[in-house]
Image 1 (cartoon, rainbow, N blue to C red):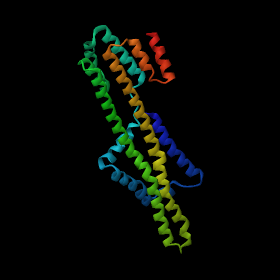
Image 2: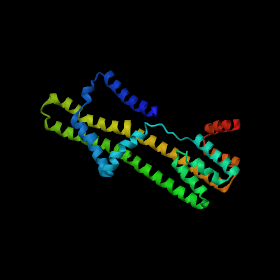
Image 3: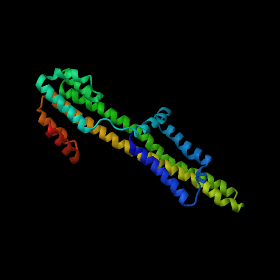
Image 4: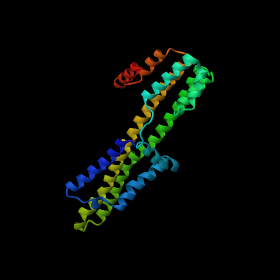
Length: 260
């Protein structure tokens, strides 16, 4: 499990609860069913309008991805590609076929399969880059649905506030109800702000970062696959792949490589 997502979400909500109690409030004061329907359910219905029922439902699965730990990493990919390169130069490209069955990375497996089958390098690049573009497009589309929820939720919160203020003004003769009615009217704004700032914006940001990292790994894999196909020296390939890493990770990988 990606513990940072759990800590972040639980922590932000917990701090809001602590703020309520330390200010002398009660949790029950901030629970209002009409506000929930207008802001939470209403903004979710707006998401369905923006996308589709299937996209709105699958949004929860997308959010769930932020709780999972990313299995692939740059260091592991580099080690695997360098191992493929050494074996290909020593035994030939066909010798890599037996290695492909154990690969969990479908993108890398597809590229290496094309290499083993003797596909031209330009064709391999076009196919893999097209595959990468489609993957990124799907990711951006799913992130866009979450961003839309974060965009419309504060607006629905303001709408709920206006609805509450209208109801309050209709009973303005009752002075004792003005304060409580105003508080209830503002709860919808609170709900909208919480959906946007505590959930949607952080989750969408984390997914964007994950998408960028995944794209970087796949670009690195494309470069490695084409280098293996071209029969380049393993040390040249290592130099190419290391340029994709940040200085700290690069130094760590170089240290491990030097031990070997």
